Amino acid sequence: MKYQIALAVFGLACLALANPIARVEEQIYKNLEESELTNVMVTFRRADTNSAWDRFYSLRLTSRIAILETQHAILKDHADVVQADVIALLEKTQRSGKRHYLDQLWITTELVVRDVDRETVELLRNHPDVEALIAEQFIPLEETEETFETRDYNNTIQNEWGVVNVNAPAAWARGLTGTGITIGNVDTGVRVTHVQLAPTYRGNNPGETHDYNWRAPTGNAAVPSDTNGHGTHCAGTHSGTGGIGVAPNSRFIACRGCATAACSTFDLNGCGNFMACPTNTAGGAAQCARAPQVVNNSWGGGGGQTWFNPILTAWRNAGISGVFAIGNSGTGCSTAGSPGDQPLAFGVGSITSTNTLSTFSSVGPGPGGVVKPNVAAPGTSVASATHLADTGLRTLSGTSMASPHVAGAVALVMHARGGSVVGAHERLTTTGLIHASAGRTCVGRPEGALPNNHVGYGRINVNTAA
Image 1 (cartoon, rainbow, N blue to C red):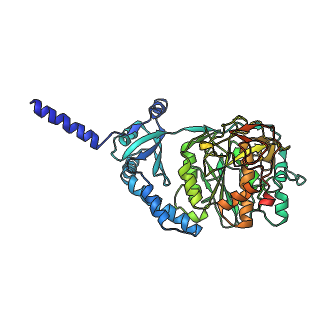
Image 2 (cartoon, helix red, strand yellow):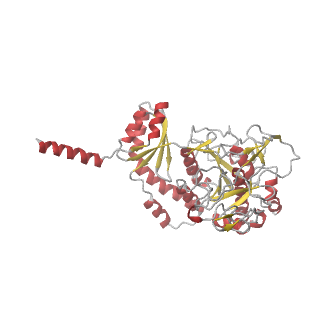
Image 3 (cartoon, one colour):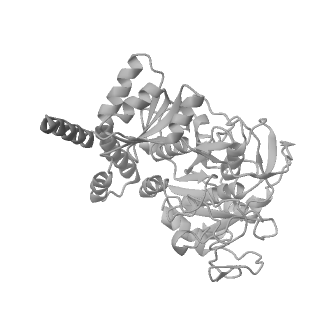
């Protein structure tokens, strides 16, 4: 009898090993105590994407469209295979009346499942393909100093000081306005009816719709909007007309990664996937050839985080420049935030109208002692479009305001010299200008010499770079 019991216990142990229970983050259960539904991200036991990446790199593609489409096809095929049984289970529960909906993160083979109840969490927890259920986290938008100097638009407004500071008007005089370049905006959304943004929103072009030009992962809103204003302001700085934007003849698309004054890590991942291969507003029918050449990211969290790096890799493969605010944690050394402090991100610090480092601008170095930020641009008291009206401007401060100056500058350099990300970044760094140093030093790099960890390779001069 004891022998039989021992065999039974051994058998149960083997079964448990063969079908291990997935790890569920405690926050998910806490969320379900407060609400009947929550959002989760599913990670998979067979999610290793190395073989998929190896297959992609072995093809040695050179055409941008071929790279975009093949990268998506290979990685999505891998995700489809790995996730097939779980997706089938979730679709079955939907047919039985469950309200959840799915958002596949094909770059990382993860699956966001929104509006799941406790029963569905337990089904996923016990599925043999599921490794873990991850809770949604929120990154607060960096606090910006606001003057709320909202002004009615009129035809006498001159070029804003930041546009002049980066020497964009001189580039415009040479015909370099961003023609043919699309800039992605991952932020709070955009008021695309604003008079200085309507001409450059790609969805307003003849024959275009919001499909492939707008995405809101939470809620799948079919029409662009912005209830916060942060994203509208940034879009104005990189693509606005009438003197507020660095690249006034570029086109922009937008993805709401920040549904409120905070950014969901699920939505940011979804937007990262969208920019690598745009979809319709519902997240389907992908058309990778519609991807932008530049993406502005005026958001970030604590330093040294690597969770966004697979997206940065996919962007770089496809010739997409990822421009990031470096953070507003002040001028003390080693305050640079992520993803801006990561190797494939082009991190941006902030300067004032007198070319001094803004008091809020975060400082490097980045992980491993790498120089960060990469460059600096105007970020203090920047006027741009407001979300409150179609004919208003608003003044804000932050590295969030500096980053879109650089995104617009990358667009001008690409207009002048072609679509190479590395080439555009090199032009902006090798032509950077020294700022007004306060004599500080971080990790042996004095602020008065280039490069340094306060403004990187200097404040940008787009006319020289282009």
